[in-house]
Image (cartoon, rainbow, N blue to C red; front, side, top):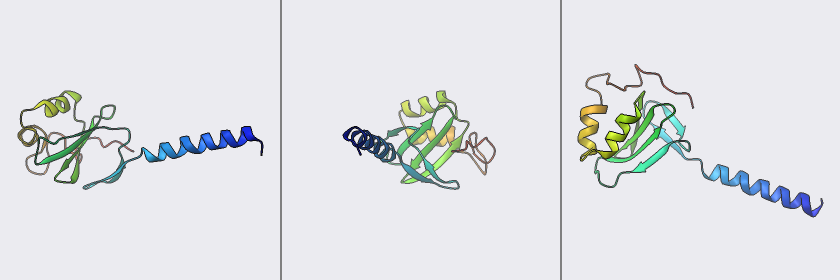
Length: 117
């Protein structure tokens, strides 16, 4: 192999390995595993209940980690997601505006479109 081919092969391997390194897989309750590398994720240190939120704006799909367990919400508008992040109490906002009452809430994935990943 020539030196040029070796350099090109090395560069391709570096790019390929960096693509795999950026993948993050989480287990979502009632759904299974999802690669969230295309989501915008935010750690939430100001909440003792909500650890992290991840949102895919193109799919209107949110994942929220509640004490380490990911839950999903479908067809959640970006305005609701933005209000959730800005709320004085994320837990209160979540309980009043996102989490369903009974078996089906405003953004329950059993009654709303679930994106395919």
